Length: 192
Ligand code: MN
Image: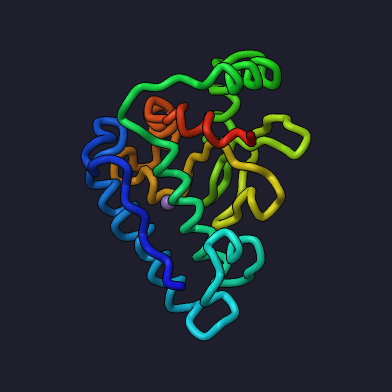
C-alpha cells in the first residue's frame, strides 16, 4: 500500500505569526512530503509494501524505519497544532496536576527538555502502560510507539522546524509552539 501525505487540518498560513507559512511550506511540503515519497520507494517489493504505517514503524529497521517513523511523527506533530485556542480535558488536567504539579510546571519541564535536547529529534508527552505521564526525548526519527509508550503531544526540535523563522533560537520557537498546542487533540490521545 502506498502511503499518502496527510492533508493539513488548517491553511499553511494559519499558524502565523508563531510558525510562518514559509516554514510550513518547507516543513510539510518538502520535508514531510519527502519522507512519504522516500518511504514509498523503499517499501516497493519488500514485506512492508502492504503494511500499515504503524506496523511498519513498529517492526522495520534502517531507512524504512527512519522514513516511516518520520511520516508518523510529522502526522502527529501537525495534528498537535491548531490556530484555535483550546484547553485540556478535565481528565488530562488532573493527570498533569498529579504528575507535574501544575500546567506551568509541565510547560517549563517540556520546554526546558526541548531546549536542552542535543541534535535532531522530538520531545514528547507520553503516557505509560501504568497510566503515568512522562516527558521523553527521541533522537532523529525514533518514536514512542516503538517503545510501547502512547504519545499524547510532540514537539519537533529538528532545525528544519524553526530555522527559517527563528534561526538558531530554539527557545523562541518553543514558546511560540506552545501557543499553538491543540489541547483537544492531546486530550483525545489519552487511552480510553
Ligand atoms: Mn520535522
